[in-house]
Image 1 (cartoon, rainbow, N blue to C red):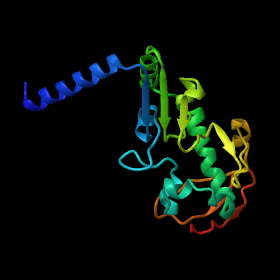
Image 2: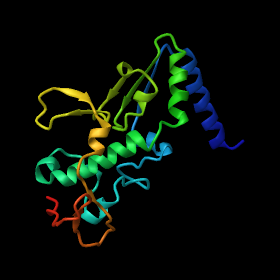
Image 3: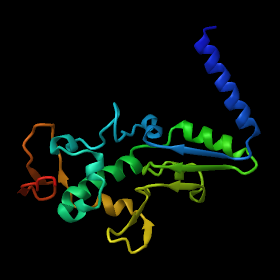
Length: 191
């Protein structure tokens, strides 16, 4: 056995011993947790959720701000509709979520999750009272002016919003046609 393999085995044994003595399990997750569910990340080789982002010269961080609902509501709702459909309809939590939850639930004080993901996947596996979603999740909505009210996202209502067809590749000229009427309009330049 190589020195590196021995070191890895020693670290794994130490982690296993700590978990065997644990009374609870707190798991923190970020975007990498969703990759095996087919979701893209904000950065790295799995980056890019919405195809038009590159053509618009934007990234996830740019589009994930409330200002777009004021600057260009059609762009904002098109992006959020895509995300809600992707996260809530077209993806499921992979088996790793269940494995971790089962492991933690077998402990005296159970399992808890802190996540920066907005996909809502942990909420499909464990009770929402055991989750702290740092950035919220697409499963719940609130007003941009943040009056404190939060409600469950109505997926059907979001999917019925009039949005635009986006068929863009990086370098394409940006022209938007409303899917329901075929009318065209110019897209405001990103700020």
